[in-house]
Amino acid sequence: MNTSVNQSQATEPRLTSLSHGGGCGCKIAPGVLSEILKNVPQLPFPKELLIGIETADDAAVYQINDSQAIVATTDFFMPIVDDPFDFGKIAATNAISDIYAMGGTPLFALALVGMPIKVLSNKTIARILEGGADACRSAGIPIAGGHTIDSVEPIYGLVAIGIVDPKRVKSNASAKPGDVLILGKPLGVGILSAALKKDVLGPDGYQEMIRNTTKLNAAGPDLAKISGVHALTDVTGFGLAGHTLELARGSHCTAHIDWEQVPLLSNVENFANEGIITGASERNWLSYGDEVSIPSHFTVAQRALLTDPQTSGGLLVACSPDCVQEVLDIFGRHQFLGARVIGQMSRQQDKPLVVS
Image (cartoon, rainbow, N blue to C red; front, side, top):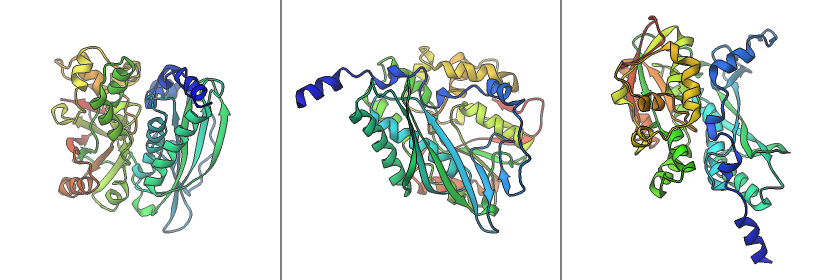
């Protein structure tokens, strides 16, 4: 009996072979999404809805009294790795991150599960859910319910619900000229996922990828307590350029990124130079590249890193210069030892994002 089960599992396809895109690289490109949504009718927002869809923020925020507001978000995607437990943990970590990115504290989650039940074994599907539950356990929250369907591709994610003091909500649309930009995690997850699909990543690269994508952005609530932290977001599927653009547009500023200061995961530059990149990075550039100023010497590989879709990426902070060390200290206490100052905000210029 055990032999037949093992043989059945051995014939299961790799999870990544079942998905046409992995992780946050599955996102619909921002330009396409804007086109889809532009004529969708919306009801007037009640005054209690502090943050809705206006600035493409990380989560909705609804005030319920003077000291409490609900933070609500959802995120799900297809496999970025082949290990089912790791896939579930990455997907859940990524979803919970949107609560932290608003300065909120997670309360509970609901699971979103779509699985090809005639292709994957019950054991494999259970391991995906176990990985998600492990991430929620690390965040100190239960999975209180969810919904499941039989689907063509494996899909997993969460609805995450949190709470925040309305006075400490941090949106992606409140940066100010002169603010310093600080990034909490290094870039390159999309490129490592492409290397994994091509079987050239190696065990060390894989472990670095897992460490990065399963680390909860739990510094968010502590960062939100600093009055000089004006804006906060997380860098995910639209890449560093795309999410910095959202911050700049919403704040009516121009963001300046010093590329030499941007932290990168190991070997991602080498992979990018070898052409190991995601299709999503090119789609991202086609969607918003005309709003970005890059140096004439910027290589195709560097541009791919700038737009590389991050799954469970780092927090991007815009803060006043006198708060920089306090922000870095908080990142350090939460073991984000790669956090770096990567740029600053200025008054609005010709383009909302300038890379030098």
